[in-house]
Amino acid sequence: MVKQTVLIAGLGLIGGSLALSIRETKEVRLIGYDSNYSTLEYAKMNKIVDDVYNDFTEAVVQADICILAAPVSVTVDLINILNKLTFKKSIIVTDVGSVKGPIMDVASKLDSPNIAFIGGHPMAGSHKKGIQAAKKHLFENAIYVLSPTDSSTEEDLERLQALLTPTKSKFIILEPDEHDEMTSVISHFPHLIASSLVHQARNWQKTHPYIHKLAAGGFRDITRIASSNPLMWRDIFFQNRSKMSRLMDDWIEEMKQLKNLIDTGEKTQIEKYLEQAREYRDGLDSGKQGAIPSYYDVYVDIFDQPGAILKVIELLANHDISINNIEILEIREGITGVLRLSFQNENDQKLSQAVLKKNHYDTVIEE
Ligand SMILES: NC(=O)C1=CN([C@@H]2O[C@H](COP(=O)(O)OP(=O)(O)OC[C@H]3O[C@@H](n4cnc5c(N)ncnc54)[C@H](O)[C@@H]3O)[C@@H](O)[C@H]2O)C=CC1
Ligand SMILES: O=C(O)C(=O)Cc1ccc(O)cc1
Image (cartoon, rainbow, N blue to C red; front, side):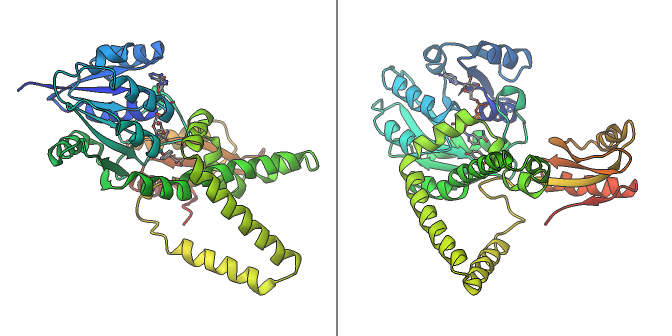
């Protein structure tokens, strides 16, 4: 069987993770392009792809399928380059960008009859960046948005889905504008708000130096997404600029109304506001993977003793459970402290809780 050549352009967190899940497909020759030499070196050394290129044109003309996995603005530039090339054979081109509008706009100008463009967005990720953070199972159970275009056929869509099957994600078809509006509401705008809450705390720290300590609990949780890659998010905000701007207008208006209720002592109205928010939030399906991936955390009480953290890690490693992230939330001399362990999925979360409980650790999973 003739192997199809698949190019991943941009071998960072998302491109690298896609490569790790696709590479086991025997009938694929996987090649990678990136502008960063050490990324290419890493990808080659760790056999994440079969071959690496630092020239996009040289790589893409070989490909049967090309996945553009660079920042959104770079993806737009790469599509513009595609429009200047001659393709002697047919190629399916897709992307992974968090914003679809600008990418689909430029893709609609592709005039080679040999290019079939299908927009894409695997809705899972992390606050980390770069190929070192790539994970084979990153997209497991995640929603994977696909946006076919006039240039793509049903067969192209099926071929792309077949290639992406090892990601174990769930495909949904969305119109680009629909996608950008929804992601602006549940991902892009909340991101900005999380960062603004952090700024607010930082400003108040000048008045109350102790705020830093108090912010370690719930505040850190609700602002977690503010720790993500600033360059990527800057790109997302500007590429989804008009939708972000509209949401900011709505938000400012809502804040004004809330301020008014607080200033005038409208307790009933405020209670109603909180109640409605609680009802809607409780109705969100916590068991399903949403667009912003859930965090699967387990809180473990540990004693401040040498090697206490290591013991927990060893225990889970012995059960083949891999930990995504570890944070020490509070530990003071001689008393118990809390360790937050984050896992890739609910299964690992529940399994680790069972293992830890069996070994007499106090654990909590927040609902
Ligand atoms: N990080 C996340 O959680 C998610 C990100 N996305 C989207 O995936 C895309 C990539 O994001 P990440 O992998 O997180 O970022 P990343 O920073 O980990 O990787 C980006 C890669 O693109 C490369 N790159 C940058 N400029 C380039 C250029 N001119 N030519 C070739 N390569 C270039 C970088 O060297 C890097 O290896 C973005 O469009 C983002 O919107 C989609 C879903 C989730
Ligand atoms: O919202 C976040 O920060 C995430 O948890 C990961 C993420 C980032 C960007 C996306 O386009 C999709 C998911």
